[in-house]
Amino acid sequence: MNSATSFDDKGLIAVCPACGQKNRIPFERLGETGRCGNCKGDLAPPSVPLEMDTAAQFDRIIGAAALPVVVDYWAPWCGPCRMVAPELEMVAAAGSGKFLVVKVNTEALPALGQRYQIRSIPTLAVFVGGREASRSAGARPAPAIETFIQETIGKT
Image (tube, rainbow, N blue to C red; front, top):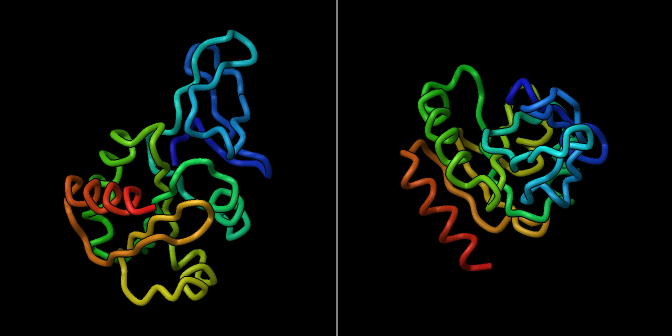
């Protein structure tokens, strides 16, 4: 996760790049450009993968996000997972404002892996409207990930 972002129960806490003020962006408004409460500067939608720290945090973002959410199920010991990480960073940057990319470490949050029956990693899943719309396992380059996401979003 970007060091300038964290979460609370209501949304993402983003640090304004202009003045350093912390601002809450509600989960429902993560696809929009926000405005800093202090300096009124623009707060761009997330453009990096967001690391989930708890299952409750994951549930809140999946359930409340107005945008599709791309979930990367991974583990630190997984070589293909480490290879796909920079590809997901490119995908998150390109999809900023269109979808969110979140990362679930299945070692740190095994209950989520079990709940969604993750059998191999890396696995990507796209959630739309709080429900899983599609899933795909295996490492792939950014263009293939973007195609998978667009095909899923286009079906919903």
